[in-house]
Image (cartoon, rainbow, N blue to C red):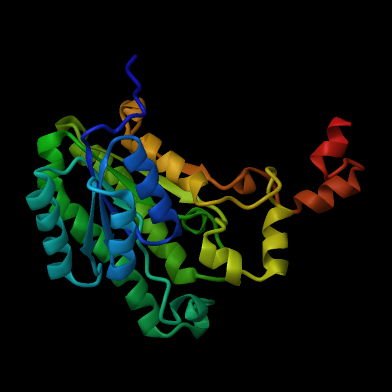
Length: 276
């Protein structure tokens, strides 16, 4: 029986694939038959993951701030696998003190804004541009990892949120411009995702603030983003393009103060108590 979620023989480039969401996506897509390119600036970690996955994986060095690096990664992909069907734009700039420095605009230094847009926006544009001729040949697809911060305001990560909002619009533009030529483009917007790094470093009191606003009751894991990405890349989503699929446990669907309102109206906050 035909399984539309399968990705047999598809070639997928996944940026930031050595990280939490990226590595989970690579393993999942490989498990569904795809040949995956582990593209990351952390090349040793990318090589380790490629070795773990096996013959259907290739590690390539990718620096989204360097156009030559981007062109080389796409060329290496096509040279090795002979085609390109799926581009997952998952990588984003977060290291080097960037996240800590990305706060309120009045105190923001130029380099924070410039670095965020250089990697997240310009890098995404360049790799998409370089991949498009190959995706047009295969009638392939693009999946962009954005963020809830690109859809809602926050008091932190102002530059990061602006870059992700820009990629939401880029998603719509690509879907519109290339849809008649067979190329789909969608995005996935995560909420708080407990990757190994986030689970270790995210302050417990901040996690509690998010989870108190989450109808699901808990932050997500990398698989909660990898699954939507793999779905949107598959033929099961062949009628979906230009969309942003939000995977945040329901944080963005209600008014603020979920826990406080529940308590004020005498509604048990614990779902088990509600059922009981």
